[in-house]
Length: 574
Image (cartoon, rainbow, N blue to C red):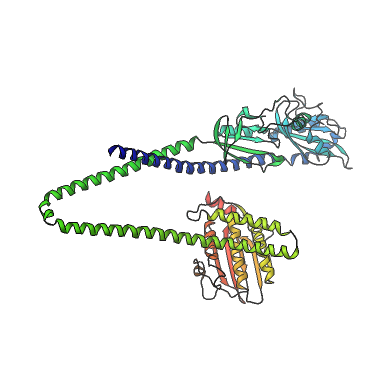
């Protein structure tokens, strides 16, 4: 019996420890992923800023009288000094002028051992693109210096519009590598072919994420982009989800591909902190559980000892009252069984109530896009056209977003907040209710501020609030005339706001807090569940905003939502 209890206890102990480790590992990994997303966003911004920092310089230099004079055949010495001064002041590697055949005639490094003067760069794509009238951009290893750089070029034209040559600058991006390395980060930047341009680990540079085919290698060789580099594949492979295996070690992997030229920025985070913190949390949980069990056993032992002492003192009386005590014990056991059953029934009732609320919320939130899909399908069947397919695709994506949010209904988390343009969100919301507006022949007036009204929030949930208010306004005017619907979007005093005004029955005697109560609705049975304003109020509160409502002069109601602007929200957070 003792051996069986020991085995059972060991199994329970292992199950508890394993469960604690799995739960803590998932939690700490999500924290690491969130941190990695923030770091990736920061490095993405620095790369974009570095690429665009001098984008205007070649345009300005191409119109410089000294540059035009030298390109027209004038002396090069004055321009050499001028370009050298510009390069030193701006921290550029080099500034150089080429004639229309690609021969360098003036450079900031003229007279140095690695001077560009006399070198022909007509084979470089940036020269060809600039000569064709565009701004040429290119990253590669310098054909003269052997050092990598980012090249930007613009054509130099005469007053008559004749192409005289090309002015180019070379930017050293290795400072990005140094900042990554000094921060102890694992970051790499690849071009459209998957070749690593910059990396915190020097051994990764000029490796490829995937093997290059013959055409890719031929194009690279033609432009002499990476001379002397074997371009071997990097020792890595993508894992499931946000993981990857690099150099035989599992890491968290995140990437962004919204960079110029089809470049990608990859960020790798070690899983060692996750493992360490998970083990610490597991040990702490085991220690706490052991302490609880120990306290329980000690209390039980003390209670048992006290009971034994009392039994010894009352042994004579217990013998006389044995029969009565047996009946009392049985009654208590029956009461305990009834209490246990009652607790189970209460727990089941609580779960059913939560399930009912979740089902009601899902029904309400999916009802809007499903109605819009039904309208688009009806229009497509009548018109015999497939123009409704893009709208249906957008509605399906919206329904997927809603279900992703609602599956965490019982334990909601805070989605990552991003800049959202209220004007764009309102236009998207109006697309969803457009069939209802057309069906009721509603006169829609849009007063949307032309400049972006940017707030910090979740675009889908803000659109959800807008759609709820628009649907309520449309439903309120179903039996009313005139049917005027006015939407306004603007900003002021550090907040962005939008209003939905109708000519319906108005608020009546109800206040906004009353209308926000779940399952409170003025519609007929079967026409709504009274969750729209309750859900909308919760979303607005998540965005640190406020919603107000008032009766409209001349009949109807006006609902207004205010959300802090993105800059205001950022300052408050800091």
